[in-house]
Every structure is written in structure tokens, then in C-alpha cells.
Image (tube, rainbow, N blue to C red; front, side):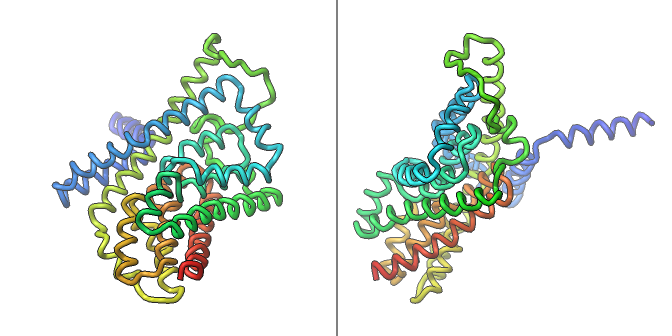
Length: 345
């Protein structure tokens, strides 16, 4: 083999080891710089700001998952959840509606729960309910769209979680979705999701060098995996904020009947930015004649399955689980929109 061929082979090998998510992010930034240079700094600033805002939840979930892996506590946690699946679905849905996590902020915690071996059904219930509403969002929703709207949204969050949890439980009982995490996520990419053979839990694991090494490896792999995907998602969100004006959405959501509700459900996925920004937009659209049911469908669908959140979910779980997650979000949001329209008029 010639020297040139050897060099090309080395270059090809190195290229295969470069992370595709990183390369895609760099390509997007390069395209922004070439096509719209003024947008580069705002996009980078938006991404960093969003990442910093999510960092406390990200670091906490990584620490929990790494601690559970190093100490052996993940077996105890998974056994505690596995014993009461029905109760845990109810608890997870209710807790999700009270937790202060957005659709992206909840991803690290979901990764930690699945990495500990927690059953998918209660995790899915929490996953769906959490981004829809929280106590602060409830108060703000009541102030902008009315108390009735806020109460229905809270009920919708719990109902969506229960639907997803119990349907998932039924599917798992029939042998589906038994291994939800992607290849490489469960065995290190997100903290070691496989429940190991029972060993004694060593709560003060830092006194053993081998367990400290396991903690560091788990924490680093979690940070690299979740960090790159969340940063990529926030970068895309920055471009959505810049290039998808809110006014362009309003023209699609007027009218009566279930048509606007269906459109709001679909449009909510790419157009939704965050819950706090969406509320005044919905208030203005309702004042212009938009149905309350369409506004509800937009808020629920966008909250659960916005594009940044969907990308992070896609990176975490296998395709059947991802498809099921999207189906829950879209079908549930549409049904909630129709029921809200009947209730609110």
C-alpha cells in the first residue's frame, strides 16, 4: 500500500470517529455564517443561554444516574418502581404536572430514570405530563388565558400522562418496547440502563477506587451524549425563533370546527418556542377569533413535542418508542383540543 493510500485510510478512519452531531452543528453554523452572517452571534448566544438554563437539571440528572450506577442503587430504584406499575403511572402523571421541567429540560431526567431500569410506562407518563404545565405556568396561564383554561390544561397534562402510561404498559405486557434505549445509551451512553445482578449497595462509593472510576466514566459519557444533543436542539430552536415569525402562524389557525384544531396540533410542533412565549401569542390570536380548543392543542402539542425536544428524544430511545411518543403527543393534543373546545366554547 502506498504512502498516499495509507494517509487517506487514516483520514477516513479519523472522519468516522468524528461525532456526526458535532459535524452537523458545525455545518449549520457555517451555513448561517455564509447565508446570514448577522444571525451567527444571536444563534450562538441563544444556544449558550438555553444550555445554561437547562444545565442545573442536566447536571443533577447526570449526577443521580452516575451515583446510582457507581453505588449499585439503580437496582433498588428499579425494583421499587417495578413493584407497583399502576400506582406509579398515576403518581408519575400527577408529579409530572407539578414538576418545573420544560420539554427539553425533562430529557436528562428521563435518561436518568431509564438508565436506572425504571419501567417505561411510568417514565412515559411523567415524560408526557411534565412539559405541559407546572405551578408557575398554571398561574401565568390563568392570568393570560383565564382560570378555566389553566385548569383544563392541568387536567389535560395528567390525562395525557395517564393515556401514555397505560397504553405503554399494555404494549410492554404484550412483549413490545422491552428495551427502549438506543444502542450505546443503555451500556454507557446514558448511565448504564441494564439492571445488573443484585449486589450490595455501597452508598459511600467514593471510598472505593473502582467505583469512583465507574462514577467518572458514567458522568462523562452522560454529559457528552446529552450535552451534544441538547446543544444541537437549542441551535435549531434559535433558527426557528429567527426565521419563523409568529404572524405567519396566526393565518393558519383561524376559523371554526375541528380543522383549525388539527392544524394547530401539527403547527404546534415546529412553531412552538417555549410555554411562556406562547401564552401571549395565543392570547392575541384568541382575541382575533381563534378557537380556545385550537390554542389548547397548540400549547399541548408544542410543549410535549417541539422540534428541539423531539430531536433529544430521538437521540435517547429507539425508533418504536420515539414513534409512540410522537403519536401520544399528536393524538392526545388533538383530542384535548376538541374536548377543550366543547368545554370552553
